[in-house]
Length: 306
Ligand SMILES: Nc1ncnc2c1ncn2[C@@H]1O[C@H](COP(=O)(O)OP(=O)(O)OP(=O)(O)O)[C@@H](O)[C@H]1O
Image 1 (tube, rainbow, N blue to C red):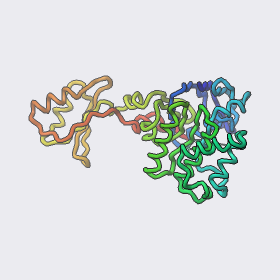
Image 2 (image 1 turned 180 degrees about the vertical axis):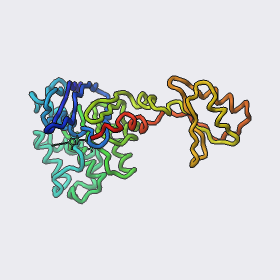
Image 3 (image 1 turned 90 degrees about the vertical axis):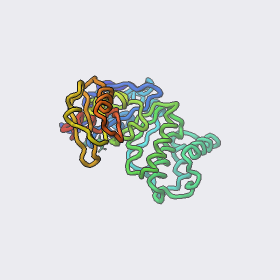
Image 4 (image 1 turned 30 degrees about the vertical axis):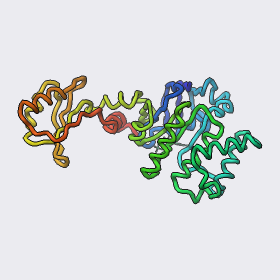
């Protein structure tokens, strides 16, 4: 388990991470979300022992990151923001070097490097210098170095930032595979990432925790939760707006659709369906929404970002 208690970091007079407390259990893929400058990277650096907190503590599988730094760091694979450094090293040399830094020698070192290379499918680029790799391959090299020592905890800072959609998909699949037997914390400001790979999301704004839940729970806080969007002929906005449980109706001229919003806790699809049949409207599309994570994110973090 990861236990974070009252973690705080100040730079000069500016409190960048403000009294954060949470737990992460094995098997969880935790998305750590927040707008630019919210304090995500600063938190990751404190969790991995690269930055001392001003106050508070972080324990990684029981090891205090400040007082038992080496033992705690052995539990962690860390993918920092951006590409791996050592750009003029070849991939094979870089991974061998990291294996040695992690304390592996001889046959054990070769076994670890081969396993990471196979997992990240890096065989084709082993002889290439890191600087000459595509962004997607650089990120895969970064992930390979993070899993070399087979750590039970992976901390990944913006793992798909700057990748094209295919590369994003590949890296997300990899993360899902790696997550099976580990704790994974992913810092991101890409909301689709949370829905795609995370079992739980924390949202921070200006260094403070503002939400903690599964992606579905967070979506259910949206004003679009249980909203029904209709495309069809003869739809009457006023009749829809007058139905019980309806909070309002939005017209979407670009899509030629109407979105009927539900009051919190209400399910309005049955009433709408009954009205459609009663009035004989010809409905071509009907969609019930789970909610919109981007709207929840904006509402929770608006005006609070640094
Ligand atoms: N070493 C430092 N000295 C002073 N201020 C810093 C330092 N490191 C970070 N900050 C400030 O702390 C705030 C949070 O930065 P941080 O990088 O943690 O945000 P973030 O949520 O990771 O943002 P992004 O999504 O842009 O990466 C920013 O205002 C940043 O300028």
